[in-house]
Amino acid sequence: MKILLVYPEIPDTFWSFKHALKFVSKKAAFPPLSLLTIAAAIPAGWEKRLVDTNVRRLKDTDILWADYVCISAMHVQKKSAGEIISRCRKYGKKIIAGGPYFTTSTQDFAEIDHLVLGEAEGILPELFSDIGRGGGRHVYEAEVHPDLALTPVPDWSIINFRDYDSMLVQFSRGCPFDCEFCDIVLLNGRNQRTKSPEQFIGEIDSLYRAGWRGAVFIVDDNFIGSKAKVKAMLSQLAGWMDRNGRPFHFFTEASINLADDEELMDLMARAGFNKVFVGIETPNVESLKETNKYQNTKKDLLQSVRAIQSRGMEVMGGFIVGFDNDTESIFQRQIEFIQKSGITMAMVGVLNALPGTKLWNRLRKEGRLIGESLGDNTAACVNFIPRMGMEKLMDGYRSVLETIYSPESYYRRCVTFLKSYRQQTVSKINASGVLAFFKSIWHMGIKNEEGFRRYFWSLLLKSLLINPKTFGEAVRLMIVGFHFRKSMCSSRSLPQETYRFAGLEGTALMGPIPAPGNESEDRTAHP
Image (cartoon, rainbow, N blue to C red; front, side, top):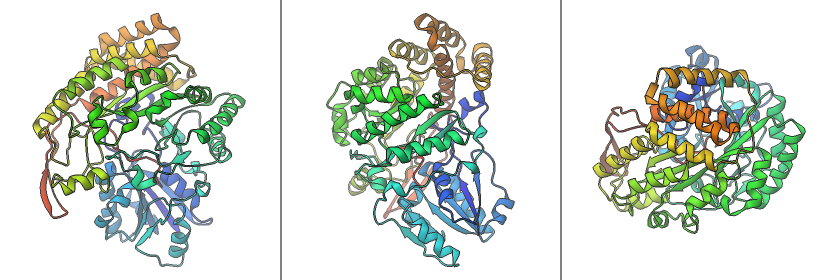
């Protein structure tokens, strides 16, 4: 049996880092952890190949080689996924499809031979057994959230490490919180399930033995959802890092209550964490209550950000505009919060309703849904009728992006960050880093692309005055800022699309608005 694993293309978004990757000569930010994990579960003796279309194009010869084509996708990848499905259908190939996009939009895929809905560990053995005998059902659906002890070590052998900037691993699934707009509870539940420390360290060790060195993204829905378990793991991970010469630096996603636990922050710093993505969403308390994000209403959000930064972890922040309780003042409030916090990587998006979420169901009952989500909440596409009005929301959103990613505002935010940041880890100098430095000099320091020249040289000098150890961090910040400026503040016309669903008709109201961002609440490693 020949299995072709195909990962659809991710468009130019906040998380694609497309414009930053050229500085480090990489083709993609991350590999497809979902397909690497599935590849490890394919029966012995079967042939397997991976085509990550973010790294290379899918050829007709790839499709013709396969008996089955296995696709995993998030909502943000649906355009590319549709094109891949059409090509496979053209050649009469059987298709296996799973991941968040297919799980929450099942009704759209009658033509798929085998749909894998939910988490795959408990489903794959039966699926592979069935197709091995030449049969198989249309739908394989997980009845329970599986024990992560069943998750195999990803098959690193089917990718080329040189293509990617960071690797992906996973420690836990699920989140104890239940935010209205988020589909994590829908996909992975509120009961936080974790791998054992030994299992997780074994995965990290396999990545090390495979030859990887550098950044590792732990893609958990909420890394600190089970604090006692994560602390036990971090103690072992810190020891492993010391014994192996500290070959990795980690980043992850966590809730803001991380700032309340000094022991946990110290353990993360000891284990080599230097970044954490936090869903801050909004400084508007009424909007936080509206979306059931009460955990963010119980603390001073600015102080919480600074507490995390002071432990040597850069805070990457998620922000949303368009809640029912937002007024026109929210745009300036978001700008002020982001600038004061020193959050350089601020992912600001427009509220979208993902299929099956509590927000989706509420808006449908209110008759306010007008389309499907693109899965990219910074694509300037709103799929419901906002309370403040569409034009005001889009104009305000544009003003936020154009302000926070102007070269001057970004520079000032970087300075604020470097002053509060207590760097714990210093990346080792390598050829890729040296090349990135000289490319940054050319693109920003000499050519003045995106108007960065003055601020590029100012930040490098300022970093030496603040702390010479942060010089490399300053170079990285400017490269990342260059990506955000080009990705999020380049005006482009988006086509209007008419949607028909649930008995409603409407138009996705999109226009020449600053575009891209991240994959909304999808998670990269959902098998």
